[in-house]
Image (cartoon, each protein chain N blue to C red):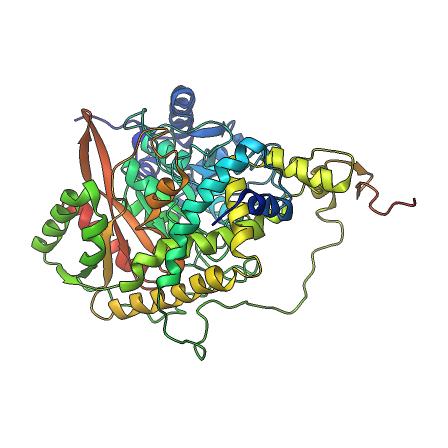
Length: 476
Length: 96
C-alpha cells in the first residue's frame, strides 16, 4: 500500500490521523509548509507563505488531545486563504499594487470562524487583481501555473487557492466567487469548488468586487471536505446585513434518487470539448438510479451579458473608495485631483481600469436604462425561470466550462476571457448555490487535463449539491 | 459606438489617466464588449412593475458602538501621511 504523505491528505483523512495519533499537528504543518516552499517558486500559488504560528499549532494539538472526537474537524488543519480575505496583521493585497502594503486591521468573519475551529493558515494565495479574471494572468504579481500542466492557467480568479490545493501545498483553501471564481479554477485543477447561496456566508472582511454577487466558499479535494469547510464558515453575521438565517427558504428534501435537470438548449450550443465527459457522467448517474430530465431556462443566453453589466457597475462603485488618501497606494502630485489620478492610475492594473471605465459607462446618465436596469430586470427573470425549473428537478447540470484549462496568453482579448464564465455566472445572478465536481480528464498535447461538472440548486439547498456531488464521486 | 473622446471622458469621471496608446486599445475593446452586452436590448421582458425586486437593502438601527479609540491605532497605521492620530491631506481650499 502506498502511504499518503500528510500534505496529500484530505481534511477527513488528516483529522482521523491526528486523532489516531498517527500524525501530530506540527508534522502536518511541516509537510504542507515544506511542499509549499519547494513548489511555490514554480507555481506562484502563494503570494506569501506564513511562518509557523507556534502558539496556534500547540493550541490545536492540545485541543485534539483533550477534546478528541469532539474537537472540530478543522482543528490543526493548514488552510490557504485567497488574498482578498482579511487576516488581522497580515497583508491583504487582492493581488493589486494598490493594496500591496495594506495590512488587515481585523479578521474577516470567515477567518474568525476558522480560528475558532482551530484551523491554521499557511499563506495567502494569488488571484486575478481584485478577483477580476478567469486565469490569474491579471495578478499584479505574476500568474499562477496549473499543477496539471504548467504551460496552462489554473483558472481564476481564485487560481492560487486552486493550485495550492491541487499541488498539495495545503489541505484545502478558501476562495471567493463573483461569477465563477471558485468553480472555474476548481474545474481546471481537478477540485471541488462551492459557491454558497448568497447570504449564507458573511462577506465581512472580504475585499468587495461585486457586492450583490460575491460569496466566499471552499476549494477542496473532495465533496466531504468542501462541506466541512462550508459548514464552518456559514452563518448569519451582524457585520454583513445581507447574511440570512438558516431556513429562510423552504427546506428541500433530498431524495435518494435525484432529478437532474439539463438545459440541453444551452448545453448543445456552448458545450465545446467537455461534452463527452458531461454525457458520460450523466449516463453513470442515470445507471446509479438518478433521473435526467429536460429543463428550459430561455433567458440563460442573456445571462453573461446581464452579469457583465451588473458586475462592471458594482466594480466601479466599490473601487471608488481606493483614492490614495486613507490607505493603499498613495502617489502625490500638485493638486488633490492629481493625488487621486496618480494613485488610481499607478495602483490599478489594466483589467481593473478597463472594468472601472465600463462600469462608469453603464451607470452614466442616458445609458443606465439601456444597460443597468435592463440587466437587473433580466436577473429577476432568470431567477424565476430557475425557480420554475426546480419544480421538475432537484439540481440543474451543465459542464463548468466549455473547455479545459487554456494556455497562458491564449485569451488576450478581454471578451474571449469573459466568455470563460458563460456557464457559471447565472448562479451569482440568481443567488443560488452551485458546485463544480471533477468529471474526469480530457487529453491535450499528451497531458490529462481535469474538467468539471456543474450543479445549481435552489436557495439554501446546498445539501442537494453535496448529495449529487457525492454521487458523481462514487460513479468514478 | 465608443469613441476616444468618450473613453477619455469616462476616465476623467473615474479619476484614472489613460495613456494615448491605451486609449486606442480600450476604445476598440469597448466596442466589442458593449456590442456583446448590448444583446440585452433584444431581450423582451415582461412588464414587472408590481413585482418585489429579488434583492433589497437591509437597514438596521444604529447602536452598540465599539469603544472609542479601539481601532484608532490600527487604522492610523495605514494612513499614507499622518500627524498624530490625524490623517494629513492636501489643502483643498486655496486663499488666492
